[in-house]
Amino acid sequence: MTTPPWWEELIGVSDALADADRADVESWRGLSAGTVEEDEDDVPPLTLRLGTLGRVFGEQSAEFTPEQSRRVLQLLERIQAQGSDEEKGAVATGFFEALLNTWDEGFDLGSVWADVGPECRAHCRSWNDFTGVDTPGWMR
Image: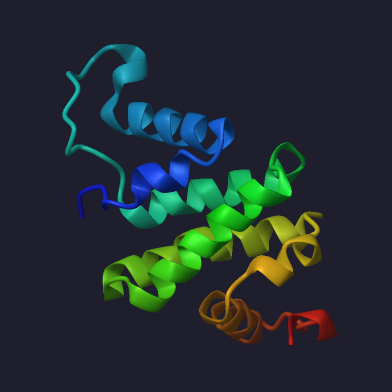
């Protein structure tokens, strides 16, 4: 899958997301070593890119303003509700599963849970069930 049209809006929310994505793409292409010429369509799979963003969002949450967090989560909810099946799967499996991993490592998911939309919340609860994690009351 090529880069979706909403991608620039997503990484444009914060420098942390844009920098992480740029580093992923450069690594994928081998640009950091200067061994491969740039090819706009040569990017990591969407699920991997969203996984990086989910990890960065959780690990660097203190760097995001409440408005930035809200914008990220609202955009991802819109994709979960209206995107293609491939986009929906990438958001769920990439971003939210990575974000849940950061929760396991200390990220305060409750601090942004009010901004997580119903489609994304449902996936998070399902993932908890699948992995055997007790879903706390505030996630219900």
